[in-house]
Image (cartoon, rainbow, N blue to C red; front, side, top):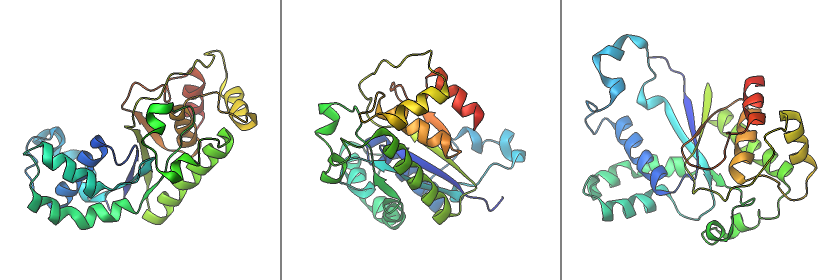
Length: 225
């Protein structure tokens, strides 16, 4: 297998989905679990030079103050698929990935999401949207550099943010100008993350019902980048 590394940047890194993903990936890297249930582990994929599990690195943004291990213990209490012994074995890797998690954004997130936020995250509520895009981009680039990544995939697994109603007629240039010159974000947090990801040359997967990259202007931006 190639020695290249691929980063996975989770928006909502320490949520239940993020914690479950981290535990599974750490287990795959430690070779402690069966892989016969994975489609890409089947013989049909053997000749495609897919990247090895060991080459993936996790990072992300999060608005709460917690950790992968804390959230994984919560999963352990609800599920019989993770044992305390297995979790203890994986803790060093989970701690390494914790160090890659940065303070998330709270633009237009609404009171329900804000109620879960840490003190550090609450300070971002009045962040100018242009500054938020820049800050997120710096976090992505730092992760890419420090981890020595060939490519970075941003995945939105955060709570669904309240919908905004941006005009579908906006071009990518007009959308970027709106973010740059507005004092208050006209768009939801998930859109701001998508803009930052595309401007940083990242792939972006939206695993939620949030608006995310699902605007014509952002499809245009993605094609340009």
